Each structure stands twice: as structure tokens, then as C-alpha cells.
Length: 242
Image 1 (cartoon, rainbow, N blue to C red):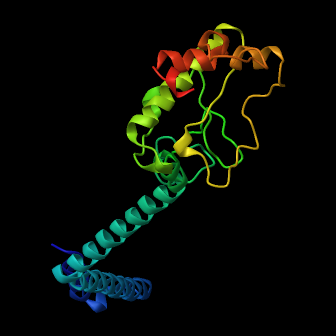
Image 2: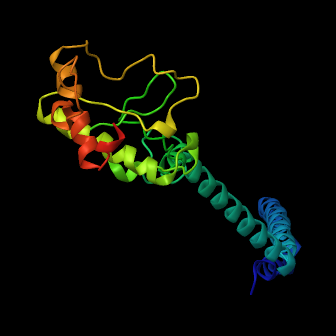
């Protein structure tokens, strides 16, 4: 039995009592009880209706929408928190980068740069005259000599003879303690008139005597008295040329 049935039974009991058998005081209390019962019934009837309306408003569709909205909201909040965490932590450091350097700067530094080696022309280790023509001496390498047949009207044999005599004189002078330099005849500059002697000496001084022999010799030619030049002429078979 629900509340409404209980209230109805109470009202029936009050109505069933013989009206004439009640005193005035009893009738008044009976009326008050009926009014109280009716008022309570009215209040109880309003509350269930509201509850029913509330329960009817929560349909499955609304519940699904509510759950979906809450799920989407939670996912969005989680995504925002994840992005904020990445921004706070910053990009992953690049190996080789210092704390104040950007990853791009570290990459540029790590990349090796190619340098083009500039090959400089070897500087000559010999002396030349004012025209750039080379001087040869006892220490020169004969393999560096370039013969030019026909240059300055000389044959290849004449050029080879000049080279041989030049090195014989250089060796002879070196043995006597003097430096001797010479030039290859076919390599001299056309403007060179022999005004500049590569070897400095005065007529009659020791250098001159070692190179040419005693000054002012007379009589028949004797290669043994002609210094280192006489020696070179003799060793190359050119005694008759003097």
C-alpha cells in the first residue's frame, strides 16, 4: 500500500463515524485531521510527479550525448596539457650543441667545410742575372739542363761541349776554394752583351790566376799554365782550338 491508499483509508474511517455520535470537539478534530491528511496527500503527489518528470527527461539519447561531450572535453583537455608540456620542455637537444646554441648552429658547426688547397709554384733555388737567365755552379743538377739545338747558332754537340767545360771549371775552382758560376751560351739573353761577369775578380788576383793562369804569359800555349780554363779545354780535347 502506498501513501495515497493509506490516506484514503483514514478519510473513510473518519467519514464512517456517525456524525451525531461525535461531540463538537471531536468533530473539529476530525475536520482538522481530514484537512491535514488532504494537505499531506497533495504535497506527496507533487513530489513524485517532479521525480517522474526528472527521470523521464534522462532519455538514453541525452545520456549518450552527455557522455560524449564529457569524453570529448576530457580528450581536448589532455591534448592541451600534452602540447603545453612539449612547449615547456623545448626541442630535443642536438648532439654537439652548447646550451646557448641553436640546433641549426650546432648542425652548421658539425658539418665539415671543404678547403681548396692552393698549390704555389715552387720558388727557384738558383740565382739568375738581370734578365732572369740562370746561373749554374758545382752544385747544379745537370739533368735540369734543356738543350735547344740551333739556339744562338749552336749545334747540340757544341751545347754539350759547353756544359762539360763549364762543370769542369766549376769543380776545379771549388777545389781551390773559389765559387764559380757560369751560364749556358744558348740561354743568354739577346740584350746581354757580357757587361756583367757572374764571377767577381780583378786581373792578376788569386781568383784570376786560378781561373786563367798567370797574367801576361807569352810563347806557345800550355794548358797547364792556363788555369782551370786550360784544364777544361784539355780534358774535352780542345787544346788545338787555342
